[in-house]
Length: 418
Image 1 (cartoon, rainbow, N blue to C red):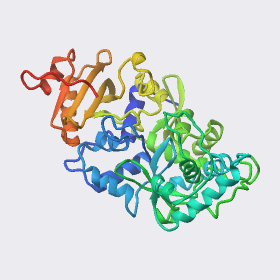
Image 2: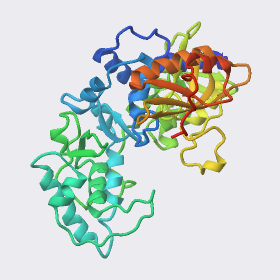
Image 3: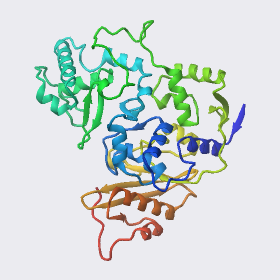
Image 4: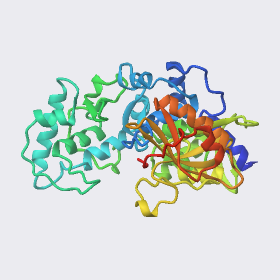
């Protein structure tokens, strides 16, 4: 078994994730498509502290591009990616979504209320009514609430202060079970629901919704194609342990181990050792001699959303603190890892204040011995221009080089952080 240094394994991971090639001078739809094909998914999140999270992985790899082009590729036929729960909520190729029969079946059997002994019958009737309404054309949950009647009492889920309507719960159950899909997100980031056949021809066709779904553990029950999913994850990751391949599509570890060993036997993966851990490398992968990337990474970027993996490969301890009470945060609310060269060198607490047209840098935290403020200042300027903001405001106490890269106008005090 070959032994790879941690640094070599990190460069393999960066190359697989699209960071070894220079950024194009003018990114176009082809660059966006190839980046998406390489990654296999981009995570969706409602937090827009800087910009919606699915836009950032493309900026990190390609530099400034037209976000309207990406919207078109995701939201107009033929869509290169469709929304589904493949990692968390994410855009993924329809062919990947089609591999998740087991996941859809589990949601169809257990999801969201149709088994409730008191309201299950009404919930099932509501689901049928929503499917019938979507057969007419796509619609948001708000639009469907106005068009579909039900008498199911509400329940306070106490989740993020939001009391979901039964219509929203039924739509989510239908969505996760594959009976309906999402055609787009509107200007308010609401899902625009539609029937799968109205979204993409390669999406699986779930027959007339049935509530007599077999137990997922029973013989012959629908199964996820774990082998195909692990193969796709291995392309996106380049190198990983069992847990890395499992996390990419949120698969159970035991079948992932079997799939990895099958790919090893088939010569598609090569066992190697990295930092005393057994890992697996895409067969024939070349170890890059160097990677010269500079990028701010979304907290949900495919390179960093597996926190254990980046600790293993890059000695970088990272967590997102959005869900941490403010007084317990160490680095800030929305902190982006900063990649320079082939290392994760720091963290940047960043916010786009659209009302003031300001990119606010609330904090910069460098890893020991990894201090690159000029490179960071240049990347912040690229991001500011891409976001269409007028200027960058750097909080007091940050390195002089960063502050000098984007100075405050004379006599002006920074506005409070967003």
